[in-house]
Length: 116
Image (cartoon, rainbow, N blue to C red; front, side):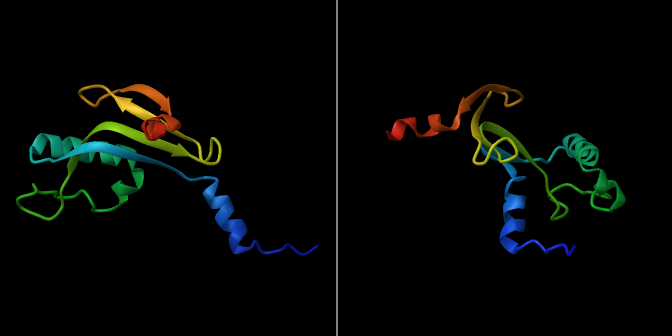
């Protein structure tokens, strides 16, 4: 029995079902403090294990010394979309004043309530 090659449309649909993303309304601040830069590097290496096999974070300088920079992102709200849950599944996320915790998860339709 011959196995048929999947079509481009079938491949694109399969990929779409796995998509997920987050979009933030946030304040981005250039990080200049050496301790915060080092902390960001450690968090990045823990989150992205493949980065340890590269020299991406070797010899990172401050923003005034190089073009490699870090930004601290303090979110106010976000949209979380995850097609793995259900196609076109989205929710709104609200954050506390210091942006460290999610305080509310609301239906996506709430973003459009004022337009109705």
